[in-house]
Every structure is written in C-alpha cells, then in structure tokens.
Image: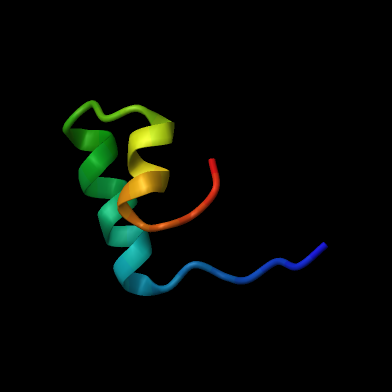
Length: 35
C-alpha cells in the first residue's frame, strides 16, 4: 500500500473544513484524498 504525507496546504484545508463542521468525507473530497 502507498502512503504519502500531507502537504501544508492540505493540512490547512483540513483545519478549515473541520472548523466549519464539514464531514471527513467532504474534507477528503476537497483535498482529493480517499477518506
């Protein structure tokens, strides 16, 4: 299985999405990652 680290931009998007109450699936979609 292949893993890659999150970029600073992806981490910021996750933080903003979480603060806005987005679901994990929605945040994953925003950063083009699998939930």
